[in-house]
Amino acid sequence: MPVTTHMLIDSIHDAQKQDEKLVLIVGQPGSGKSKVMRSLADMRGWKYLDAGQLVTDELLELVPRVRAREAPAIMGKVLGSLISEVYLIDDLQLLFTPLLQLDPLPLLKHLSRKHTIVASWPGTFENGSLSFEYNGAFVSSQRQYTVEGITVIQL
Image (cartoon, rainbow, N blue to C red):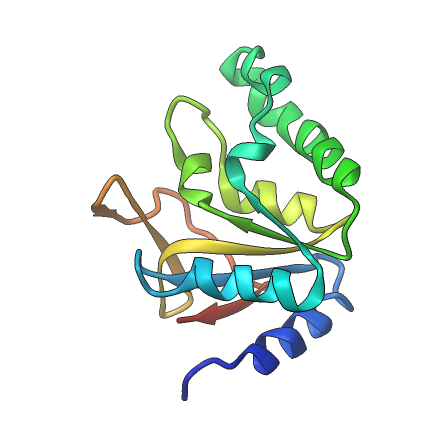
């Protein structure tokens, strides 16, 4: 059954009742994740942003081992300054860049404790496991991501 906008909105509202208010829209490149997210932004007035907007100079100036620890606070300030009921974060593959040395899913989970986040996850969700696509090569996540408490919608 194809995912409808109404189903997505219902899933987002359900996620808002959780401790971690995170919805992942999972799909391969070209599956329509960005289109769906832009549509939600237009329909609901929610803030659509590229993950690059969360990677500030303040974050980049930190040494890598400190960066991962400070990223939630720095990115949380960015989200707080944008003021929205829901934040639609696209182009998540940027957060997988080895140079940043971030772990995207725990980072998003942390941010979603304070903000409702819908993020486009570039890859697949199979047998309870998330994998992602980076630079055109399908790469299985090095970490075992648990999706407990996270709403996952596959396109």
